[in-house]
Length: 433
Image 1 (cartoon, one colour):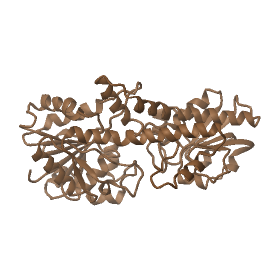
Image 2 (cartoon, rainbow, N blue to C red):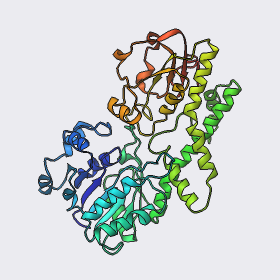
Image 3 (spheres, rainbow, N blue to C red):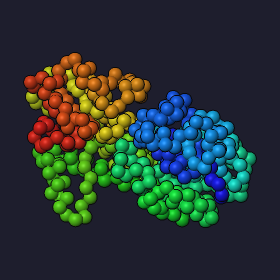
Image 4 (cartoon, one colour):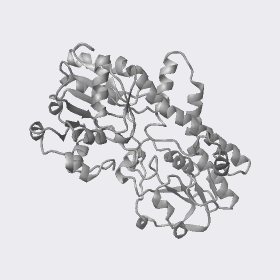
């Protein structure tokens, strides 16, 4: 395929960094249905903080017509006709789970419909969204065929190259993480691999087929989930023994092959979601994935567990529980990142509220509007908003700002501090995982 013109479908944490990198070497149209997102990106503003204003400004062009007149650049649009002239489509929309933890492929279906409407002969569609093995060819292919009237592997082709974005990580950026690639035919697989090689300095790994690439992605995070569940269970056991879990892990870590996992909340759009995709497919095939689901149950229990242990500590100190004030520090799913998707800090908050306590949430990274829309919480993100003193504090997210946060100004003389991520010096908090 000569003269590649690339469309990136979905400009979130995954799609935007990819679009920026491709735009340094190719003509790229970034497509998203969120009008506010389009306006911000055209003004070189990225609220996800995955790209800088300088990076956006260096590749953004004023219009699609301008893009057509030059060899490289990025045009941001929410108009379907703007991607009609593209011949290489990369789908990077989210793949969440519903309230029952079943895969919700709605964004993927809608993105496939959009691409299908503009698909022409010879085009290649690559999916980066995390799915269960078989989803690209079994779920997305029929939609592309129906909407385009074209025939798979005759008129158009598919590829799968799972995203490996780590939100908030400025060291392991998109080009510095080895990329798995695949294609629906050997020839297409090489085209896909060669294209990614132009921007991925860490190199690529060409998988033998699309299903293998899909499976590789979904087990990456499932493996981490199970390992974190193990150390979370250890933290519960050692707590009963009055042993500091982190001391145990530090000692065990002196062995060369001990894996350095730490206890904590497991949320976000990857580790807290991907295992359900694999479990869903396994159960569809008649197999009950015991380890995967038990790991999920254990990790999903950690938020309520932290809240319950905090309440127990308050009771031991003689602090009245009903109508007490508790401050939760952090609501994003991880440290030093504005992403609140599938944050498990909300589990701590909801469990605390069940004890009839007043809960305030402070997070300098999160958006007030997003938090209120997603969780119905009136977030504080500036210390000037503090108007009371607290009986309990749960340090839920290890933002760097919390290392120098002067808690003494905001707590009563009798108080409890629970350090979920163990970022404070030993002995500072009343308890930690």
